[in-house]
Length: 134
Image 1 (cartoon, one colour):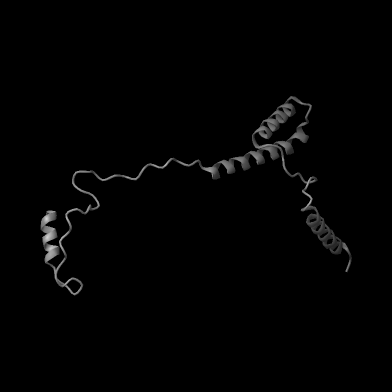
Image 2 (image 1 turned 180 degrees about the vertical axis):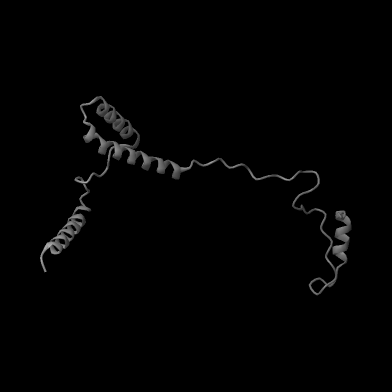
């Protein structure tokens, strides 16, 4: 049940309540509404899709784990065997993608070393106290 806009405006102008005792004032002729009949509604401009950086970072972590697994398997297979040479080539390829390791166990950055040594001493003292007879 659609009502033409001009009839709807007449009904609204005729309403009387406490907020508008004289009814609604007539609209000015020169005001632009939200849209007029001549122009169709405009949509919002398309935004460009953003790359999913979380997926990329997760993939880089997976590559790091794959490199760790290859490095762990290499001593058992041997680096001089044909399989070992292929593992070394795979490690080099992954290193080319994710870059060299920033921190190995023995190459901790200077600010981290005192904290690590303190924790190691605490751990050793706990182990020694557990071994001593009571």
